[in-house]
Amino acid sequence: MKPPSSATPLIRKAIDQLEEGSDWAPLSRIGQLLVNLFSDFDPRTYGHEKLRDLVEKTGAFEIKKEEGRGVYIRAKPSGGKPSTQKKPSA
Image (cartoon, rainbow, N blue to C red; front, side, top):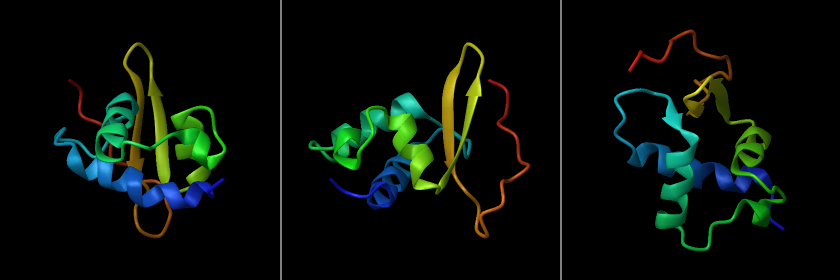
């Protein structure tokens, strides 16, 4: 089993591939991209059943859940402090 932190560069690469116009990325899209970019990607390889749990365990990303819209993630800003920037309304 690999440590969750070893998934961080893969998740960052998937986030970078999205052109959503926001620093927040839908977790469902990240999951799809991870499988497309790395065909053998599976969160269970890192000790987690769900991608959200893996993302949280890395400690490198912020996570937010929007009612009726899903879960979004973004890389934590440098210094590890959460950003106060909000996701623009769609």
